Image (cartoon, rainbow, N blue to C red):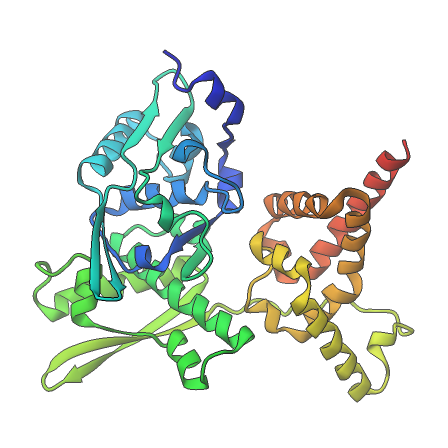
Length: 386
């Protein structure tokens, strides 16, 4: 019997490693703060599977498909025993892995225990792996309109501790809110800063990391659950994180984290011709023009598409020069493409551009986007004429 039916074969899209590295993981915050009853490998496998969900499309049969070869590459498994190790990881995930979710409701708390991936199918002669999510986990992964967190799958890939992954997800949740409210407003300045410097009680941290009955000695807990995970995170993710202990009496009561994004080279757009009206000799006029263009860019549908494709971050949206450059020199070209191919044509172009983006281009994303659309538009125009 084939691994997938003919119907599924027509619908499936097996995702490769190159595509996965560009993927984002989007989860409801209740899932981020839940207790993950699983070790690092099943947890990373779950994050990997979630990253394959297209948040803008219905998830057919709650199912995603992965390439076994690329799955091994993601986990950096290269030995001769990799197939049996993969089998063990899947079996371990299904036997012991579940999320304990606690949500506040009108009359109290609601508790759910959810096995996230009850069904995995593969063969020893085929490269495809079928992963099916449970119906109960789907509301925490699909059609999320609020209270959700997204992070880059590539940040998770290099983390080798369960606690690193759990802390990274939780810190991402807080920093996402910091970036959101820094740009959109709606919170007091001290509230916004609290997202960048989140606090959690030791009791809550032990619950979230499933260490209530482990590392009873605080020094051991600090070493295993804080120091080593944060060292990993600072080395391999986009965050730099420090922390401080807050005492209540003689005991450590809570932990305050301090999150900063690693510096990115300034996105100077490019040198514009002297006659460009945006860059007038008068500095005040120039700044006013930039602010006006940047304001228009923030409201543009294209900015939203860039965010959705992780070609732009909320942090970069605070760079007035970058946003002004996008509005003046990139978005008009997207308008041309929209006239020819519709908004879906722009979406497809940006999806392709995101899949081909190399790390070096992230240092000057606006220049990269301008070059990409300038190279693509002539091809589209020729096709329209033919």
